[in-house]
Structures are given as C-alpha cells and as structure tokens.
Length: 225
Image (tube, rainbow, N blue to C red; front, side, top):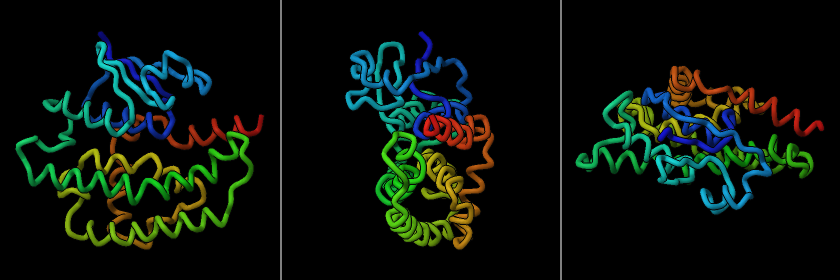
C-alpha cells in the first residue's frame, strides 16, 4: 500500500515531511491535498484529532504531527538516502539530536511561527491586520534564540554535531517564511547561523519542495477574495 500524506504541498508543516522524503529518496507516496474545510471532517479528525495537517496513513498505520512523522520516516527509511537521525544505540548522538529538536520546538518555532501568523495567516483567515508590536516582540525573541544558536554553531556545522539531521531541517519552513515576510536579513548578524541556514536552503531536498513563496502567494490570494 502506498504511503498516503494528507496535507497541502506548499504548506509549512507538510513541507517538513516532503523534505525528509526527498532526503531519503522516497518517491512512492501519494499526497492527498486537503482543503481547510476538510480538516474538521470526521474522516480527518480520525487521522488528526486536532484537525490539523499533515497526517499520514502508512498501510493502515495513522500518524499526525509533522515532527513525529519526520522522525518515523527517518527511522523507517534509515537504510537509504541521508542519515537524518542517530542510531538508537548511539546514546550520545541521540541525546544531542533530541536536544537540538527541543531547541527548535521550544525556542525557535514559537517566535518564527508567530511572525508568520501575524504577517500572513492572520489576514488570510480574516482576523485583521498584523499587530506590529507583537511582530517586533516575536522578532526580538527570535533574535535572542539566534544569538545562542550562533554560539552553538561556532562549535560544529549543525545543531546536533557535524552531520545534518532532521532537527536542522525542522527550521526550514518557518525560517524561510520569516525571511520572505520582510526579514530578509534576519540571520545576517549571526555569521554561523547565516552559514548554517543558507546551507539548509541550498539542499536539493528543499529545492524540490514547492517554495514558501508559492504558499505566500496562495495565502495572499485567499486573503484578497
């Protein structure tokens, strides 16, 4: 049975999953494009109880949340493509990997995603214009995180060591979106972060995923209706 992915190809969280599949060289999957109204249907709530995307159905095994899906896929296809997650018996490597995942989830994602909400999603969903004071607050929070990242990345090429992992790739969707939403030079004051993020954006896997610009254009078009 073909792996089924329920999501929107150019959306931020779906793009995480598609990037990992590209890194692993997996092409045998079916992307089932969801509409916003579909996410609250009984069928989709059975896949994702909070009515979000993406979710997968892998031969009857249903899983939701992009980060969990990415870790599952990295383990399932461990023997092919880019090694994106340490072996279970590499306790040190796995500990550093999970630490890096926590950095992204707890210190990077909230301000980066919140900038996206204020500058794009809020208007697209008819919730009014961006609160620029909040945008400034989230930008400051993100800069605080990047300052610390710059110290970490001075010691090794990636957040968990000298090999790329999905902990790094998790940053791509909202980091790239923040840049496109008026913060093009966001990473410039932090040379190690700038080098790291540019190396992620240059990966062939990310280039195969429909760009954040496509998502941006689609959301702006919806907001204009």
